[in-house]
Image (tube, rainbow, N blue to C red; front, side, top):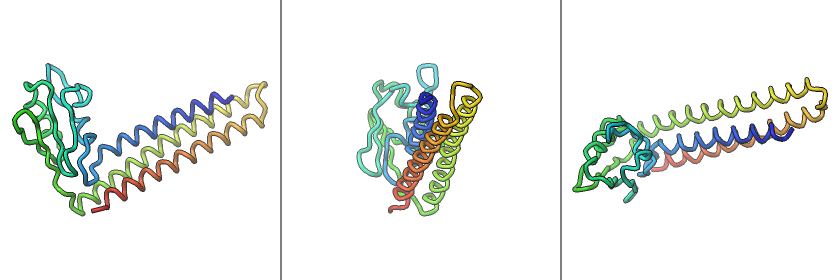
Length: 186
């Protein structure tokens, strides 16, 4: 019976990890490689996110600057075009064999836009958790129709699923609060 709860917890953990990765793509005033690692680059006859292609190393030099160091210097222009065309409000500058990306400070208006965006992402994460909860409750009800499972056992599974739901909702709220604080700090 506990395997149902373990399965639901795993689904909730996966949803939480998706939300964490999603939050990492929202700029919060400081340079982070996660801001550009998912940008799609056309290289070697195909298109892939920059990190999947493993075309370059990306690191933050300081709070406002990212440096992209391509392994193969022949794809530097493709990486530059991909980042420039990604419509994320940043323009790389080719500096010899590397690309420099200077991130301007966020305006109050832009911070508020990002705040709205993370609120939407937070709600999406909560929807994924609620869907997992719903599946867990449905599975518990299906078990109730089987003769070998007592009502007490079904009730225990439902309580465990609800407990997991509450835990992940709290984790999501904490993640949102941290990102909000990071965004609104000048």
